[in-house]
Length: 539
Image (cartoon, rainbow, N blue to C red; front, side, top):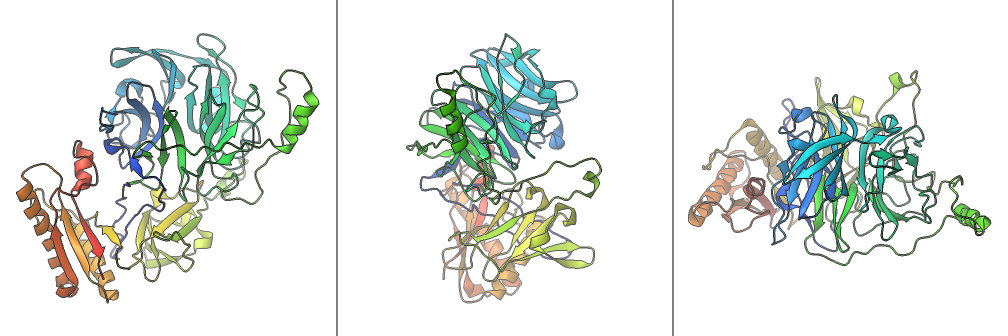
């Protein structure tokens, strides 16, 4: 159901050990989109029919701008069995800058947002066979004033673009805007959706359903938000200025950061989450279509209700001033605009919460460390900023496996939730830093040896239980040989731990070959996930 992050790294001469696990579980089974995801940031999925989903992938080495490219367009397709294929790069829709798919303006015209040297704005691409040909730039006055992390979508009828970004009217961070189509290539100036929708925090990735008049978006500051969650509000008229109070969509929300909901059909959705990731956001959906538990009770803000009563039989009014409905104290990180004199003193505060991965209860007595030039440095969780951090931090708590978190995963705009795995029977840990020479049981790489040395230290400090080391392979090749290889790899890990003092009788081994896959063997990405070693605490 989840993708486990490979966040273990070596820091100086200090042994650091990390295991990353999903920190939330849905009542319905959630799955990653098979081979579509990557260790990079996968965002803003767009359904364009024909079993095809477009999305933006950042920092992938195959992007036109390489590993520093903030986003190229990629594509995944679903087969008749419901399996999503390995994502394919679409250089015909990408630049060396930031690229986001917005969706179909009509059946043959795709809109894409570019922020690059040679293209800056929204552009039309015309479909020709399986290819997309560059057509022209649309005219959208004021779009050049929208900064920040631009994300958005075209409505199904092609008449409006809802998007997020930082503009002149933003309340402090990314806000939601809409632009309406007024000509073949002409669109209206961005309209701020108002203070019922927008907060001083992050409000991003809108999707507007023209049939239900409901707006789906992510926010980290509306009531109940933990990280970024999905909220739904209903348009009260066609002005896009009068909205119901946003309601949290509990079915999709978690302690982490959800975003970018898109509907494949009336009963099937795809969204993104940072909690099931090898590094950033992944594309998720339900394993099988389930009834979508979309809130039906949308309350009208009191101020809007009074204004609507005063309108009588008049048509729509767009000049009403709506009061904010978000609380002054809520979960989220409201950011303030800085003057040029203040920017030099700006800091990037990090908000951390540590929870028990299984019970989801908060762990208050955790400790933070990082490697510095002078050795191991204790960190103050209450005064944590990006400027004070090195490449990674280590999170520890008594009775739990420690975890190493890369600095690249810490974002000042979103509270970070870290789940620790308790040392107790039934706990299962993926030893994802353990590597072998191809086709052999020979341990490979300094990172592997450092990882296993740290694991031995944890096991030696936590007596009283036995562990099982299980080897797994992908489904390629002879099943008998795969089973033998997987057992030999588990044995190699055991022997290394025994050499470092872990009692032989506490370690059991098993080799499962390719009989217990985590992902589809139809793609290289899936096969790579299936080649693994796991550790399970038995008693």
